[in-house]
Amino acid sequence: MSIDAEMEREYIEDGGRFCPYCAGPNIFREHFDEYYKTQTVTCDNCHASWYEHLVLDSLEEIEPSYAEDAEDEEDEEDEEESTPDFTHLQPVQKGLFRSF
Ligand SMILES: [Zn+2]
Figure (cartoon, rainbow, N blue to C red):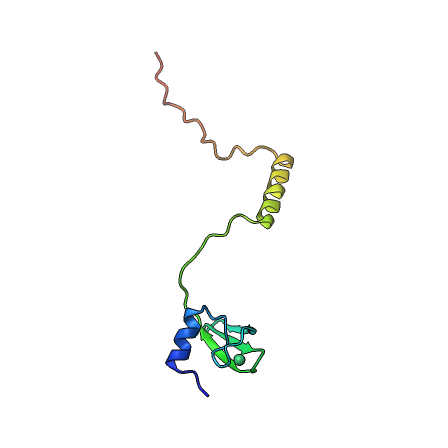
């Protein structure tokens, strides 16, 4: 039995939640191939396997995480310990003031 166009269409419309062979819901994904962008999916019911061809669709920003918060705290500690940084101040140029 092979996957025909109808099975493929239904599978994609369902968001890849059911086995295209037996319609069982217990499918699991493994071995994502970074180069070919294929995801191996196996059905726990009929033990069929197939590839999903994944397409990059869009991006979504992730809100600042717990890990980044911890990093911020580290930065604050560094600021307390180090001396103030004046390197961003430009040296005063002489000769710009008119003398009367
Ligand atoms: Zn199945």
